[in-house]
Amino acid sequence: MQTPAPTPKAVQTPRAAGGFVRSAEPEPHRARTRRILERHPEVRSAIGRNPRTFWITVGVVLLQLVLAFVLRSSPWWLILAAAALVGAFANHTLWVIIHECTHNLLFRSPGANTATGILATCPTWSRAP
Image (cartoon, rainbow, N blue to C red; front, side):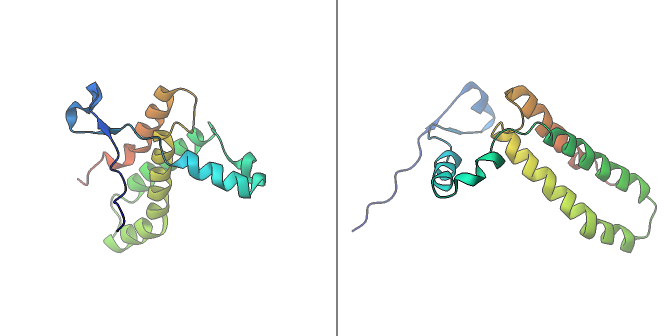
């Protein structure tokens, strides 16, 4: 009979007051990265912090905001086409950047990563009139 995998320990921290739970377990990406590098050392140059991603964030946020402004009075079918053909890719890009920010992979400073993650959520703040 197999024993179930151990449940990750959760610790309450002052920031966890809003219902968030922080795990005391190590983040899983490091072990996976180590295994990948053992098998494929040539990918080492593609791993690490990349502050240039901040400018991609700015560009994609501006793209979405400008597109929303330009299409504000357009027919529904054009808005739907733009959302499917442009907006979906832009939105996915921003969620990937938010994920990278949560792992502090853009800047050394956690605050700069948090600020960039907040900027990346900017297009989700607006609502339709």
